[in-house]
Each structure stands twice: as C-alpha cells, then as structure tokens.
Amino acid sequence: MSIEATGWGALLLILAMALVTLATRWGGVYVMSFIPIGYRVKQFIHAVSGSVLVALLAPLALEGDIGARLALLTTALIMLLVKKPLPAIAAGILVAALVRQFTA
Amino acid sequence: MPSADSELHQLDRQLIWSGFKQLAPISVFVIAFGAAFGLAAKQAGLGDPSILAMSALVFAGASQFAALDLWGPQVPLFTLLITVFAINARHLLMGATLYPWLSQLPTAKRYGVMLIASDANWAMSMQAFTRGQPGLGLLFGGGLALWSFWVFGTWLGMAFGNLVSEPRSLGLDMVMGCFLLAMVVGGEKNVRMFGIWTVAAACSLLAYWYLPENSHVVVGALAGGVAGLVWREPHHEH
Image (cartoon, rainbow over all chains, first blue to last red; front, top):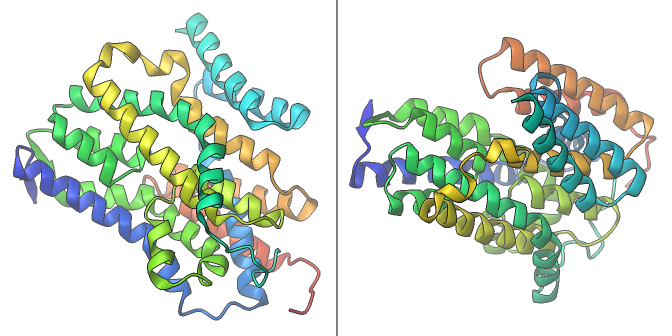
C-alpha cells in the first residue's frame, strides 16, 4: 500500500512513523513489567545493555570508509588516554573531516 | 550489577536540569546533525511542516534518514514502517534495561520519561547507574536537551540548508558513532565484558552481512545478553 506524500498523506505517514517509534520506546518497559526480575534476568539485561552500543558500532567500524574507521580509532584512543568524552568525540570528528578532505 | 533498591531512581527538577546540562555539549553536535537532516529532507521533497513534525514526533535520526530514502510522490507505507521499526527496535532493549529503575516510578512518569529515550541519554543514564549514581535525570533532562537541539538543528538546515551542504565531508555523520564509542570505552571494562562485547560484535557483523537489513543491532545485543547468561558474574544473593 502506497500513500501519496502530499498534505494530509505526508502527515499520516509521519504520525505512523511516530507511533511505531513510540511503540519501541514503550514496548520494552511494558514487556518487562510482566517479567519477575531475578538474578538471571538481571545478568541478561546487564549484558544486553553493554552490548547494544557494540552491536551498533561493529559494522560502522568494519565497513565504514577510512575516515569513519580512523575517527572511531581516534575517539577510542583519546578516551583511553584522557578519559574525557568531549575531547575524544571532537578529535574523532576532526579526524574524519581531515581524512575525507584528502581522500575525497 | 548495581542494585535497584537504593534511591537511584529519583527524578526531580534538579537532577533533570543537571542531566540537561551534561548532555548540552554533545547536543551542539546534534544541531549540526539535525541541520543535515533538515537539508536532506528538503531535498527529498518534504514540506517544511512535515520536516519539523518528523523531527519533533519521531526523534530518531537514523530512522528519519532511512525514511527519506523511501520518500517520493508515493511512499510505500508498510516498507516505511518496517524499516522504522527495525532501526528503532533497539529502544525495546533500552527500555528493558532501564526497567529496574523505571519500575520504581509511577506509571505515567515511567512512560513519560521514555518518550525521549535515545542512544546518547540512555547510554549516559546506564553509565550513571553502573557507577551507583541516579540516572533518570540524565535520561529525561538529557533527552530534553537532545530533543530540543535536534528540532532546532532540523529547522536550521531546513531554513539555511547551504550552511552544511556536505555534512559528511565535515565528519558530522560520525557525531553519534564517536559519542557512543566514547561511552563504551568509558564504561565498565573487565574480562567478562570483553567476552560479551566480542560475541555481540561478531553476531552483529554476521547479521549485518547475512540477515535482513537493520537487524544487526538487536541480533548483536541479544547475543551479547545470552553470552552474559552463559558467563555469569560471581553470584551474590539478592
């Protein structure tokens, strides 16, 4: 089913997107309210919470362009050295910008 | 694992304001990212009210960019919604991982703070809990910062698009990636966590290569969760 992306159609599409996204924001909390939180469940969600970002970043780190990969490497190194997120992030972005000036 | 029975779930004006201030520096980058979205949306043919409505109501950058790829005179509704769901399904896991603390709040507040949960404020909030500090102020206050800067950035890009005509060449597409990596590196590090990360990264990559598009975050994170069940922390009775 296709919807015409003009006027009300566009608004309808955006509302539908918003509802689906809201369902993802609320759904996990809702489902958990039926699950008794014991030791195993705690271990599981703790491991999941440590894994979400890694799973998000892995393809970017491996499949991204050289600018993206060096940006991530820089951020990781500076974060390990300085332990402050802002300089680490700023340096990563700077490296991506510089590398892309020379490789583009 | 931090225990949820202390006062870590508190959420008051002061904590929210402090969360807002802690996320404000990163939100400056979010403006640039939002501006890139505003411009791209304009180029994809969306009207100004639609662009602002999307950033304000959906508030999930990656899925908004993906929606632009599907945008045309006719938009395939189900393809759009499945794509949006797949990209945003990680919110399900975020909500679940926050549950031990959210469950201490009254229902309206519990779902209210989740309205603006996203990667950055969730990560900050979980890190605070791991350190034994209250995290919900970061989630909600930080979310308010991210949301307002995101909408403002979208408007900037829509109105003065040529300011950031090539966000990629300025490295702006890496803002979230670098931020989230800084959270990972700054977070809990031990042999067990490295093991879990390895499983998560490997499964995410396999899903990225061999499973349907956009499934890799959820697959990798759940695989990491299973790894955490197999390799458990020494058991302390609760």
